[in-house]
Image (cartoon, rainbow, N blue to C red; front, side):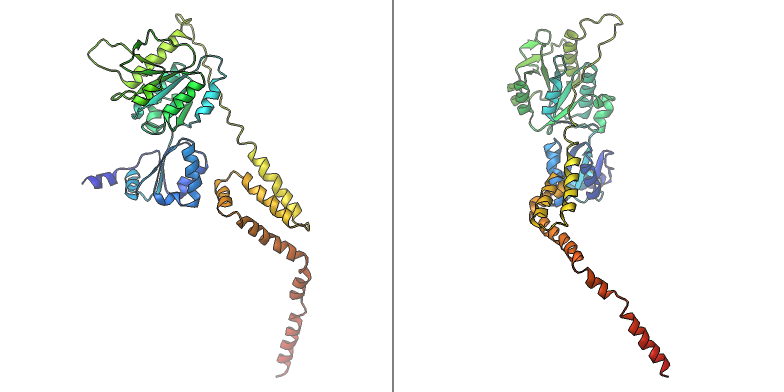
Length: 376
């Protein structure tokens, strides 16, 4: 009865499956959290480059069996691939660091280690954005994603808080250290309380899971471990609550210290991401060479046309065309020779076409027909 129950469960609302729908979602740049695919999809020329680009951008790509995909999609016809869309777009850690360097105030970033509950993730995002944090560092594995459930708990805060997806959290912490950040981890074994710790300058607050806390490797990469004193019998706090207390303490010492009564809070300064530098250069590079090749075709030099055409294709942004260039480098030149041959033929054998289509041939046919009719 359990396999029937699993097959009858409907898929989640944030899932996309099927080759055409998945390809359209990947090519459109839609934010994706997770990809399930069978081994056959990696050998497909359409999806090989798309899966590579998705993995480098922080998307979790898992290779599973057809039976596992059937469970994920609720028994639908998945054709070997399924996507889980993200409720918000993510960015690179380098872009987040660069954007926070121009804030004019000490940046505050949060990092989550092993938070697998989407409700905890949504609560952390909501508290962090409300208290003035500038960004969130989220690992690919062993972590909840920016799903619809997390977005619902975040209550709109996910649209305003920048989130960076990283492959390895420990390497990312070292990169943040090199950029001038101090990494502070929350752990019950910390030797400094939250009231005594120094919270000045660029900070990264790292929160672990509720059952295991911070991992051993993550603790080694922290500059300092901080604990929150508790008085009751309950041994620990919820991960999102502990994070909210730390973020509040940072805000209390910084922008909250001059606020009294009904005085308004100062406006938040958000990091400005420079993402417009990549898109503009693409169109002008692809359009001018096309005009040059068309004007150069009627010329007498054939090798110059092949050189111009070969330089046009690498400048295109389409991943499928770019892959065809690497797979078959000589096919483009053969196609160009095919396209040039009819142009060369159209200039010289033009009179032969007129002779073949001339009206002199049907006239004798009509004369023979008339003679046949007159003979009887």
